[in-house]
Amino acid sequence: MSQHRPALGAVQETLLIPLYGRAVEHRAAEPALRDPRAVQLVEAMDYDFSRFAELPSLTGSVLRTVLFDHWTRDFLARHPNGTVVEIGTGLNTRYERTDNGRARWFDLDLPDVIALRREFFADTPRRTMLAGSVTEDGWLAEIRQQPQRPVLFSAEAVLPFLSAEQVRGVVERIARAFPGCWLALDSNSPELVAAQDQHDALSKVAARLRWACPDIDGVADWVPGSRVIGSHTLTSLPAPVYRGLPAAHRRLLDDLATRRLPQVTGYRMHLLRLP
Ligand SMILES: C[S@@+](CC[C@H](N)C(=O)[O-])C[C@H]1O[C@@H](n2cnc3c(N)ncnc32)[C@H](O)[C@@H]1O
Figure 1 (cartoon, rainbow, N blue to C red):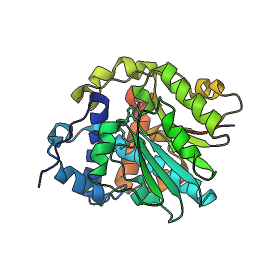
Figure 2 (cartoon, rainbow, N blue to C red):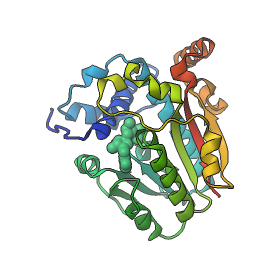
Figure 3 (cartoon, helix red, strand yellow):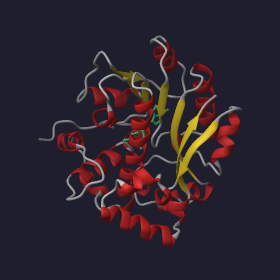
Figure 4 (tube, rainbow, N blue to C red):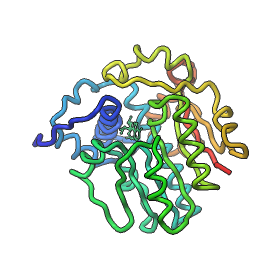
């Protein structure tokens, strides 16, 4: 049943990698996460996903999602009526995994992605899709029209595709519009960005990483008063996340930790609290 042929721009196409990773993970005997929607979406799409089959970084993308899910659940436990904004949502299904029945939710992505997303997902009174670039202002204005609530901005595997100047602009505008918000993001070291043509998944797509981040403290310095709540590599996940993984995943991470591969040590996921 392959009816949907995704017609996506270069950076937009990258959403298919984590989507496929979650679909593969769902079918594993002991999965780190369940995502039946990802399986349905992959089956419904006319796209050669076999190009991503068996890539080691698929597991990495799944573990990243597990951490971002953990941060989202933590945020909603502290702020059950809070707002979650998925920046560069792709075909992510975090709402399906973490919604608490009360949160307000926004899914932002570029127009062609939102058009594709609308083929599979519908807006509801608590969930709204927004078409636009994170580098523009319109989406922030739409969210500001809502009653004020604590906000988590979750930018999973999105900002590295922007220039450093654009990333700084995004962080500064979010901070100005939503004082006290949380921001989850990920980053790559300059060495990883320089070596991206050898990356197992990126070498299969046209999009290229642009933002090289030597140190998250530099990002926090863009907005004085920002605090880095967490900064993790895949091999230094928060203890509750690591403990919650299946044994095979923990063994893999333990092994990776001893090898100190640059693709692991240079890739980090961060949670910031903006002032
Ligand atoms: C690697 S995918 C990640 C998708 C999703 N966050 C996930 O983890 O499944 C990168 C996503 O960022 C989106 N993106 C890239 N540049 C963007 C921009 N300027 N504004 C909004 N979304 C953007 C792409 O369209 C794509 O959906």
